Length: 117
Image 1 (cartoon, rainbow, N blue to C red):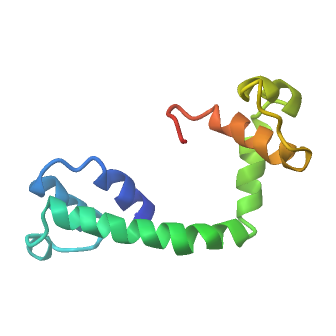
Image 2 (image 1 turned 90 degrees about the vertical axis):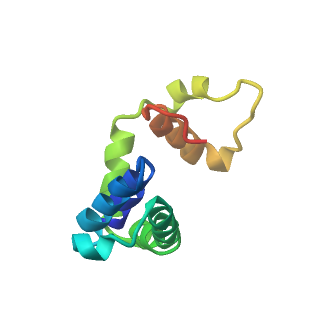
């Protein structure tokens, strides 16, 4: 289990008992160790993990050799840049040097079930 898993599941914690279960599942705590944790404690721990993920883990992943295959896989399912132009507001002129990024981003974002902006 990872910090990301903990962070995701912490968003769905409803009550102190669920918070304690999360602590035993992801933080390796025994039930007696987790007894002092409540939903607020889990929320604080999740904020800690979010900072680590955003400021350490994610930047390291982006710089790693493992990132390219993930991005290629995501873009492989995306349509061509030409067909992605319809996903952008028609009055917006995408700068030429940003076209690849913007059209790839909207194509991948379009595949997610929820708004990411």
